[in-house]
Length: 75
Image 1: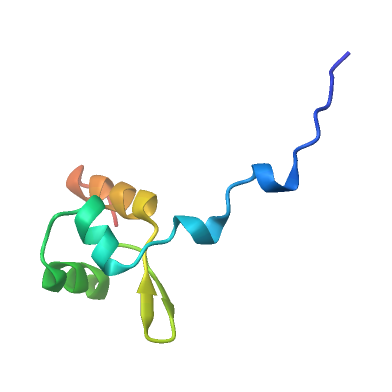
Image 2: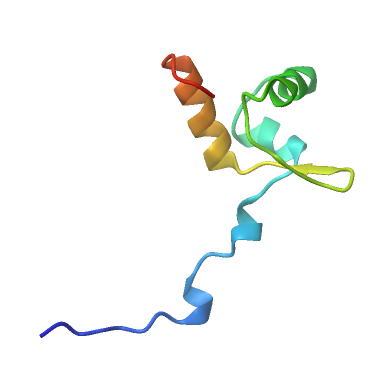
């Protein structure tokens, strides 16, 4: 017999907490210049979310997209 353990509401990670701004992305994930990040964003190489004038990135998704591109896959 399987035992079902309920998940506490605060045990799940907050999806909004994983998004970072451009400055944090440049410091922690990809050490490139801001213009390169903008070019990658414009070309569709990296995923982002635009909320008003604010642009946010999910570091894990950006890392995965760049690795896929490096391996020759689609962005």
